[in-house]
Length: 212
Length: 212
Image (cartoon, rainbow over all chains, first blue to last red; front, side):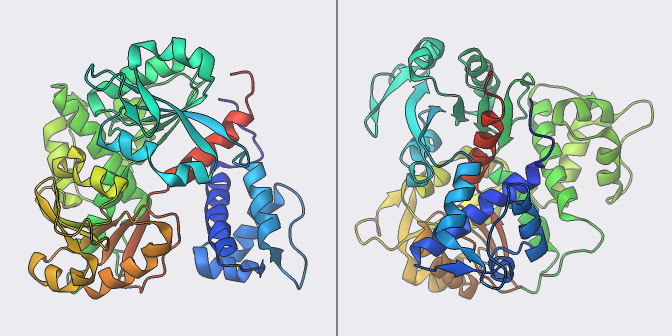
């Protein structure tokens, strides 16, 4: 997939972290921050923060710092989370249902417009006002919905098939919760949410420190 | 927190990825793999794979490759996911409920033994056989359960308080789903599951490639 050579992925990941932090600050009515404060709160080096922003122009005022609302809205614009984007959820099980009902998605303008499942007992039912559609109808339905982002919340054994169907339906960005490594064409971007792996890393770290 | 200077965190993260891949292979009755196949399937460089393993001894046979079951069980042992570990879930809302019912946790021996919430209407009810307990009783209850790993699935505004209570209750490893940056002592390890951030990164990538 064609990504700008100028902006490394880790920079984008950190921008998303800054945005999260700035939204917290805004909710706490903080007006201005310094890069040192950003470092203290996010654990990301102040120089790194300034470098990350430098890809996108001039930010902040020397000796004054960064206006929270301004920086928040500029980063949101850079990441394109300043306007609603339609999102499909694949899988209406426990995880899929939780995601459809998760307020954090709408807060960043990810708007779930379709939910798909293959279970005949679920198809036709509603999940938070959204009707569950037969996953076999994904392409047809998405020709209307025009979503390009999908969230895979089906079991591991079904995930590859869902990813294949999604690509055919024009969904080119997949957030994958299933514990498998998806094979996709280079026209599709996948990011994995691997919380079981995160737990495994912590499990190792805990074992190193038995005094805790 | 005291982590071994020898094994970098990215190596641990990759080990968790290899483990996930090996479990898939085992389920597909694959006996042996080469580092080249690992690279092809996981996207992690073959030399990196061999280097990651080299922290933990000798693996595989030259010209033959790696036995899938053996490698899987050795990595599981390294990450300490070869035996049941008790886990607490904080928050019995949509996300918390989905996590308690998520089979992927038990598959890697993360056993949810306690669920906590502060909502009086939820306290006392059961979630997949586990009674929801008042979050104020966490320390008392965990003195029996002895869990050291906790999953934070409460809203952002409640997450810091939950993290503080968890640390007091002896829970030193926190998997944080709340979209805030937690402040914890260096006796506590936190890993964030930031799927909204993952979506934001993909949102940027999609926008670069409008032809899709």
